[in-house]
Length: 172
Image 1 (tube, rainbow, N blue to C red):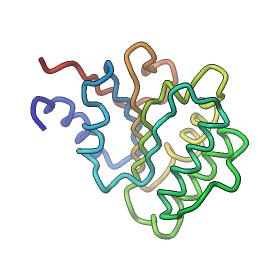
Image 2: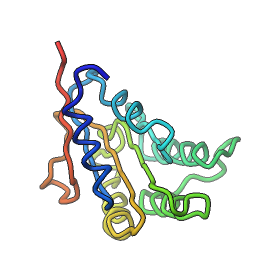
Image 3: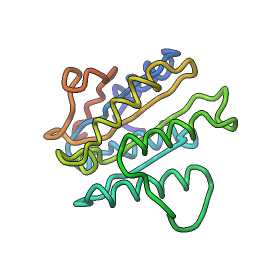
């Protein structure tokens, strides 16, 4: 990946830490944030969800469920989406604790965070519970990557959760 060594070094440092890490990749649109994460982690990504532009909470939760089904290798329509983000992240926790995922570093990738974590969505309630009660305490390394834009970027103090911030700028 040309011109992104600084960003790759931050991801490598976080990956090598041996403890759960929460990384926010921020930058303006179209600078390669998603490409960086997908290129760096590749097949290591256990769960990936891309937020829906202008999606309401019900649609975002259904999208989460589709993404989880895909991660499990399941096909077909979603029978029932979780009623809220707390239930959604509980389902993700159960998936990550499944026997197939045992003794494996886990990578969770949530792209387009601002489209999901709207003021009325209550996403941060479910997410912070997931991180504080499970992910950050996991003995098996868990790596969470959130992608967002500058204007809507959480900072290290806003959530009190973020371990590393990768700031992407235009190359040219």
